[in-house]
Length: 107
Image (cartoon, rainbow, N blue to C red; front, side, top):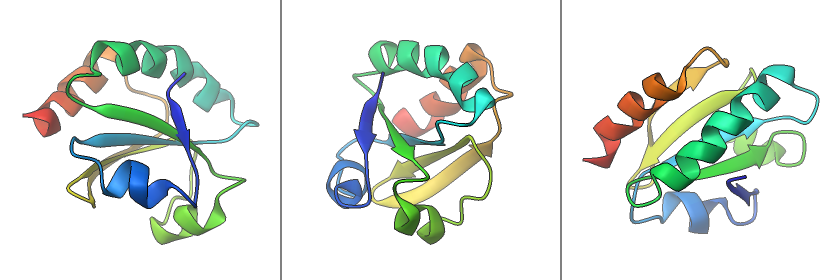
């Protein structure tokens, strides 16, 4: 399980990170979110040197959800140098697709 972030530590953990951060905006009641968990858990370990992967519970952290206009779960947003640089909505990505996607920001 990736590290969890919240409204309080989002800036420190995500925006101020020295490496790119993938934020998984998820919800406990969201089956597609749970389907993505094993893939993201694997990538958290596999890509640890290049990309930080964290989870944000949308129900518990409304201000971050509103700030980044997240409307569907799961939403994956990549942050680099404190800015959102790309996103994907839904659970349609395979492990290989996610690695290719994240690699372009880790360079």
